[in-house]
Image 1 (cartoon, rainbow, N blue to C red):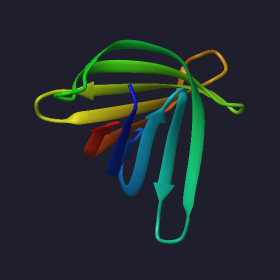
Image 2 (image 1 turned 180 degrees about the horizontal axis):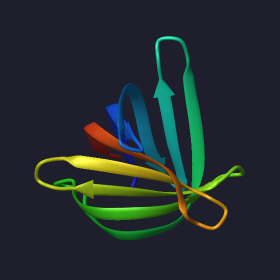
Image 3 (image 1 turned 180 degrees about the vertical axis):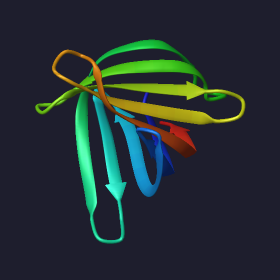
Length: 112
């Protein structure tokens, strides 16, 4: 499954922050771009495994990705209900425990 999502609100460890985020998964690469008035920052991760199911026609389901980069590991979970799509990105410590969590309120989700 390849997709793109846009969000203008992210909850970081429980605190809401208004910042534009562009998220995408293409082939085996997950990309997260944060855009502000002054700069942008892009992070890329390699998808190492995928679990769950996703109905691309209706954007329903629950899919989880294990991710890695040269700097850290992370998980990404996409949950689609009839009301909304949410994306949770969690950075893990060296032992695989959650270190920092980001929950994106998705405005647009497009299957590619």
